[in-house]
Length: 99
Image 1 (cartoon, one colour):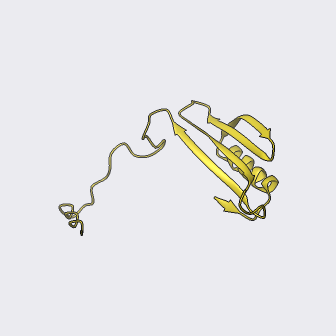
Image 2: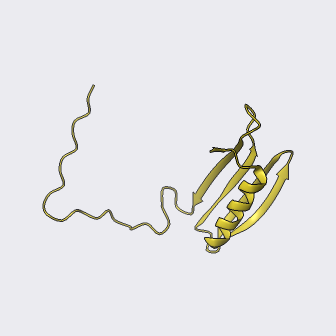
């Protein structure tokens, strides 16, 4: 993600969102112009990191990298365990792929 907001503004916004979502900041590490926030949910089922730095190709931008991890690979916390089937009949067939 690229933004014209300053790294400081971006970090303040992500810290606020993490707090609102009840995700704890496990570490807050600055190295050079980059800062990395590691976050985790209390039950450790969800965690990740956010890295914020100036964009190398154009320093008027701030680059943001977000990585999210779950306890079970491929799982989405809070998502339904089964995909609901639409009512009203059978699910239509997927159209054939075009060459």
